[in-house]
Length: 386
Image 1: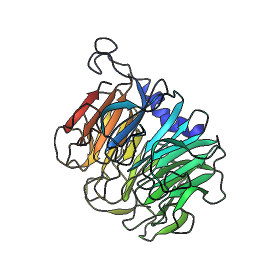
Image 2: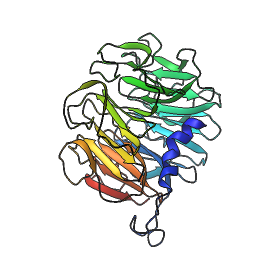
Image 3: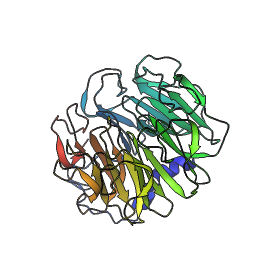
Image 4: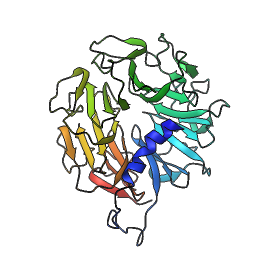
């Protein structure tokens, strides 16, 4: 599962960092900590997988998005079911999609646009299996649509299609996984608010859907109804679609961005929109990033190969974690630690995991989406002990 290994590869990168017992309160003793493998921050809620393969969720639960069988908000990590075979999970604005170790596909939460893919538009408040296939290897949940790749490299999409974000040359919503094109060489994909970005196995970059602010990066502002190649470069490693903007990393570790930039979310030192990829700084040690989905106001988080944590963009709820509510239009380092291994930017909050498996969160917390048992906003990374 090459794509899965690419996404979780940051763990391997960070593993070379010597872990300090002071990385979190209690270290490996004292109060101890829950060991998390991955986390995904969605719209006012969070979902995560622990090292034992168990699934956990907390925060806003209006459409059953937590998957615990209720519509009641949770202020601390709550276990979802009893299975220990969850492999990967991704949270959109109101729905969650996940893959188990056997390659089966599961979804729950908001389904008004068919974004769960179960053939209906009915919300689900427990994980619901999608089809019977066991060949799913990578998924991405956007605001109201979902994009996935199978083990044969084929591309699939479902959910809202108002902005052509499914890429099937129509504006028709789909409530079951629908194959996009006939290619079988898709490597990485990211679903944004209204657009989708992807990378093929040859390193070429592709985009489709809404392009009103240049978020596809093809130099124009026209909708793209089908996957359209962006430039001629074939050295793209990762791409992250947010709300009307995109962040990407090349194989040489350089950072690039384009699209909406009203709050400095591109990180280029300006607040000017860009409709082609522009390089962010000169560093070539960027490892991974995450772009948020939030109604045209977004923030970005990234980590470098040395395990350091960086943020920029909107900071009205303290989601950057620098102790202020000041927006940043260049990458700004958070603390001095070098032990961050996994990150996810939510709608108004941010989550991250350290190399010791401890979970941290900060920003908006009205619905308990940080998981610290309160509804108090946090302006700096806060350890989530459960």
